[in-house]
Image 1: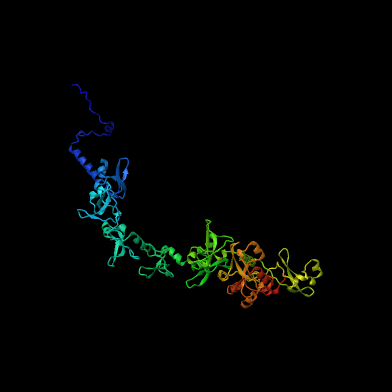
Image 2: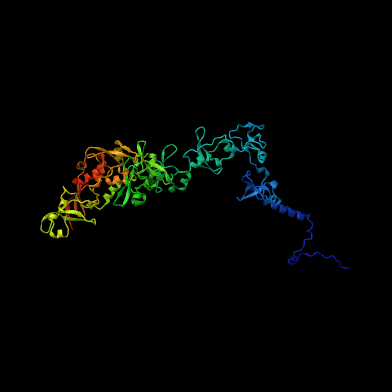
Length: 627
């Protein structure tokens, strides 16, 4: 018998090498074994399907690649993914369960024609509201909460956000701390029912649809306020010894004062419960701010400026800025807010020789702001409370005048004695030595020519007799008095008067009847000359350069003769200076008296002549030591 030419089909070489035998029944797909295997695979796939939970079935995104909408879902592990609805899913997606049921897909609803639209009852007893149909006709649709699933799938409902809520949300009671609703894992807040009873409701974002329909919730805003910090009330903090901190007064809902810690020192539980006061309110209440009623003073011993602070009783104390205070002062709160010491005049540029305007019974001075705009501002003492709080004023010192500058320069110059001294020479002859200022600004004491020795005359170390006669000669014009005693007391030079306070200046100028000078845009004030006649001259800040050079401007002096005022109110004291002892008046004492006595205007020329010729006003030697 010839062998068959039909060759047996060989198995793959790899299978033969591995010893894998071919299944003789592999081609029979209807065998019971095949059916059992298919059932096992299907059961395995069914068990492996992912359970998806739609997040927002109203807001799909478009899948450009497959031309369909996909919806955001969350699986049991919390992973988010976009899947199609079941009718648009592929076989593979259906096998893996990557789809959502068509009935869960909700089309976006329509908006009501107006929020206060009047509803109509439909055949099922539901309220329906007017909307604009596709053919521009008015249709009536139910709210989403009343719509059937089919209506939701087709978008045939009215969005509730387009309607005014028929229920009114409640406000959480102020100061009422929330409690935990363990059944639903949320916080509920204290509020009042219509009967006035205290009840606890969730905030709107945590409320169920049923609670929202019935108005059984509090607004989100009022709920947040219960966990926010309180504002510190007026009063002093007290120590909380148990937790080594300070607690600050604040008002509870019933108006009582309670004490809470500041936010930076509160425990997490206190912060969650809103039982704390904000750090900002503590800072605002406890920080001391500079008073605008007084000016800063320089503390020479501590080399710093100290600023006036007015307490609740109206008492004024002088305190340093925070960055200049000592550790002890900081610990005791004895400092002022640094920001309150900033000079508001720094942001304004005063217009030189600018004409002030009179408005609302006060003068307003022209300045320019940073942007260059013209602004009129009052001085500190005439500013309103609102202007003071917003820095819309000028300190009196910023309205600088030439007179004030000259006075300060004179007081700060190195001063020298002005009267002759008595001394015995080598021959035991008593004679007077007279001060003479040389070209190098040094003071030398020289005899008059009739009492000088031959050597002194040869070396020109003398003063002509006519210059030493007080009746016929003026004192040395270069001679300057002492400005400061050895103990630091600032001394009056006898040649200048202190500047008046802002109130004094304003009061006096308003009592006069000035004339307006249209040529220079200024006011001219009346003064009485030495011969009794009257003339009108400007203040130094309004004077021209020529008038300043001639001294033809008004200055403030005492209404009574200056010599009488000093004799009545001041006693000369003895002070030690570098070369001996002098009898003089402290400038602080003179300034104090100057603020208490009535003032008048006089010309600068007349005032200088008075001060130069009145010997009783000058510093006098009581003891001289010559090295």
